[in-house]
Length: 325
Length: 186
Image (cartoon, rainbow over all chains, first blue to last red; front, side):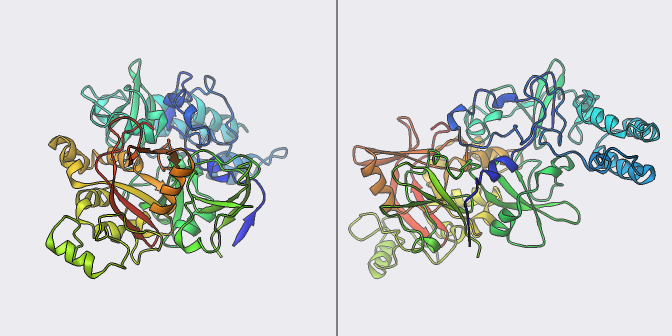
């Protein structure tokens, strides 16, 4: 067991989730204006180190928003000297192939041609940045089947609304950015049509993000911190990824989603900060109750695999305790 | 053999024969203690409660068997079968389909709090906080718990469901049976 005395907002920071494709300055999508009531929750579409704010993040491409450059960019980011051109080219080519696995052939060819040409011209990073951020992915990145049926990511004519009247509100309750009635459902994805194109596209927990499906390559950067896999995971051989307050186990070989490993609050609980709302009741798991009983000097609360020690008077979090020994 | 909590002779006999098992209603109709952990995981515990057999099937459909069998601790408020039976047939059927699964998971998240919250601790916290508390959930908003006219309401609004007397401890959490779906907000 380890008691963390440093801030442990790691979950909220590390485990945010991108919208797969956005454009027209709607970087925050439907999350805007709906998350205020839960200030402690991880903001779903604001990854750590997000490079651009809402309104400027034109076509926020998956993997851009959390400050982690793509593999190829990292390979070339050493920077001042000339990169190994052959090695870099192969890395970039692999990266692009990985990212365009759902594009049509002509698009793939054009991107690859751009990249190869750019490597030769010593500006691969610029091409990849453009590849990531320009509007093209918005217009062409579609769930399987959608583009074929609708000529380039146009919404289906008879698209269903995401929520039925009976259950309207539950999506917004669980995933604030899916509040509102402008979202449509297609084949495990939520998308928002605007001006004849898809403005935002989100794989849904239980839809595209469910056992048997492929973990989206666009979500590669959403590996969960090792502790979560170690604590919640049922097999050390699996990889663990996070999206929308859900921890998924994924086969490391073929990237197939094996299942949901845990549902999480995503609460940002930080040492030195007040305990967020929702922890009025003693909730430590049975196995740890004798070790962490509430007392006059300290109270304990469980959340997402940690027990937090809290000052009963100030309600400030004093320590975060990992439950793995 | 499944446990039955309906007022049948069989359940009465079971309750009288096993008064110390701590996971059923008590002979005098009061709420059973949940102070001690149960022997089975949440998933196995829910599977044995006849009153929530519909919810159990939906939990399976939602792919939540693993988290309910795992190391994570949860307190789940499961609507009883009658609550689901009040839904329009097509809505209930939808929740059992692949297309309805994202919706189903969103609904279930609204009914799941984190940690193991015993009935004793719940009542104590209600008393200490003027009859109104919040539980951190795996949805975006905490779950409001209120004491109204001697009954415990789960969620906000006048249509918030009530806790029944059925509370069952599992090894990794607690199962409460409620008489309706928790409204999406609050």
